[in-house]
Every structure is written in C-alpha cells, then in structure tokens.
Amino acid sequence: MTSGDWNAGELMSIVAARQLRDGMVCFVGIGLPSEAANLARLTHAPGCVLVYESGTIGSRPDVLPLSIGDGILADTAVSVIGVPEIFGYWLQAGRIDVGFLTAAQIDRFGNLNTTVVGEYDTPTVRLPGAGGAPEIATSSGEIFVTMRHTRRSFVESLDFVTSLGHGRDGRTRSRWGIVGRGPTIVITDLCVMRPDPETMELTVIDLHPGVSAEDVVEATGWQVRFADRTGVTEAPTVDELSVLRRLRARTSEAHSV
Image 1 (cartoon, rainbow, N blue to C red):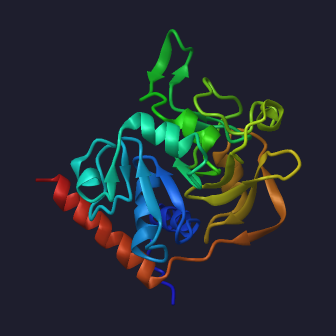
Image 2: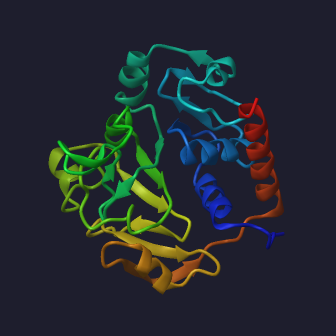
C-alpha cells in the first residue's frame, strides 16, 4: 500500500533509506544522510550499523542528532572509540560498506564541494568545510549522496573539490588506484541518478512521481543525461511515511526544549 499524501522532501529521504540493506556498516553524515540512515534502521534494515565521525559505532538514536558531537549518539552506541581509530581501523582499513554524504555542490562526475562557493581566497560563501568527508569518499566501499536538486547545487564545474567522486574526467579513481567505488547513486528531490558504467557521468535512471524530464533539465547546471528507459520512483508506503514523520516529530520536540 502506498500513500498519496507526501512531499518531495519526504520521498527523497525514503528513497535514500531504501538503498541501505540490513547488516550494512554505514558511515553517516549529519543532515539528510542521518535522516535516511536512521529511517532505514527503523524500517527494513534494523541490523544496519551506523558509524558517526565522532567515534560512535552502532548508534541507535531515537531522535536525529544535531551534530556528530550530539550526546545521543554516544548514549545509544554499542561502542565509543577515538576518532583516529574510526578513520584508521574502520574506514581506511575497508570496514565501511557505504558512506552516506550530502554537499553544497555536485558535478556530473559526483565530485562534491562543502568548502567554498566562489574563489577560495575571496569566496561568496564559506561552507562548513571537509570534516571527514574526503576520507569517507575515498575509503568507503561505495558512496550514496542525497541532496536537493537546484542549479546552484548541481553545477557544471565545482568551485572547489572537497570530496572526490569520479574526478574531473570520470577516470581519476581508477587512475589513482583508489579501491572504493565512489558515488554509486545520487538521490534528489526530483530524481535518482547513477553513474554511467563507461563514462561515470551521472545519468537519470528514475524520475519521481509528478516530475518531468524538463524539470530535471531546468534544475541541472550541465546537459544532463537520461537512461534509455527512465523509470518512475516507487511512491512511499504508508509505513515508511509514518515512521519518517514520527522520527521528525520526535526530533523537533526534543530539540525545541
């Protein structure tokens, strides 16, 4: 059963959550990735192990954290270890199945920018910065990206490459011998994209219900490609929507105190 009463933001989180399988070890970014990962844990993937950069392993928060340093992550974790061990033993040693990231900008090859908009020395906007995202992007088994789809975020050329996708030409990972597969899916509030297996250029494989190809073209800063047989994203189920809304309501109540 599906519900017709949903919005694009809810669908984006639900579609992103569906990508996680039970038992996966997931390195989670704050914001949209955290919402999607926790939604997966609360629905079809209860055994998904959530790892946060602050050193928490197996966190099971009842509400979404405000930051990687939010105490609820440590309070609900199976284990809390040092940041160097998170990166050295878990991430760089290949123990992370998937890194879940978002960004301010993305290009056609899945490279991400969370550093600056504009010139580095005199930026229009100074963004939060890299954090652990560059290491997550290169050392995780694969990367899932979720972000809102606008021309300001889906750009022809990044102002700064914070986290490597498939490089400026789509060939950098293989040329540099990077083991991780890089971005394998990008979920937005308009569509779902995957890299073309030959060129590694992001290609639209599914349009969300009610979204046209023209809508995606208008919101993308490059000449976006579409799969030969573009599908339609499955609408949220009643259960998915209910769990997500309860999670958001608990989070809003907890953080408004």
